[in-house]
Image 1 (cartoon, rainbow, N blue to C red):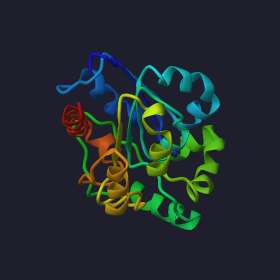
Image 2: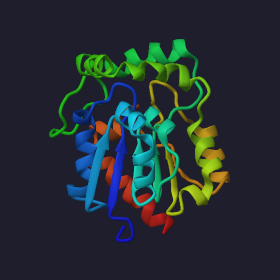
Image 3: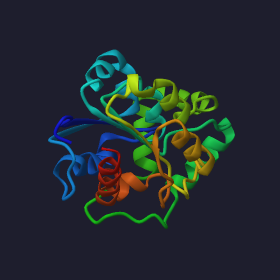
Image 4: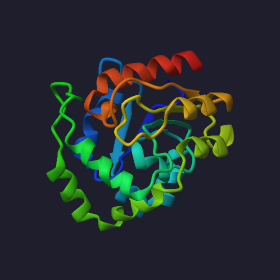
Length: 214
């Protein structure tokens, strides 16, 4: 990844920078590091400073998780992690509970636990994020990547949903659609927050996929 040495990480609904920290650090300091620098932003931070961050993203690799994909305009390289797909409001709200209460997912030893209380605090601090469930109704991450094409993402496009995503964002149909449009796509094992709580494994997999596309 010598040509792109910096990365941004965009969080999804209620994900604070502390929860994003382990994945962000793994990108630039872990055993399978891909970049020299990486910086994380919450959904509210990106939404509030969209133009400035979008301009800087042209020179960086961008890793949006979940609803973070809705704030992607262009990037030197983009890898969406469980990017949202059209989902009714009631299902989004209902399955958010499933994500928060998932005891099967586990976590790498160094990852700080983040649960319902942390999520509630993030939403309370930034009530603008409450509009996300309404926006998810009509937003498709895979379609965003298709529409942006190589012009918006000249260094490559990766579409990486997980098989057991509690929200059901992305599946075999979306992966096939992405692949048919020249996007590197793979349905990974794990749950919605898998990349964030198992960051070393996630970064290693991303590195393997990037090597395959170069």
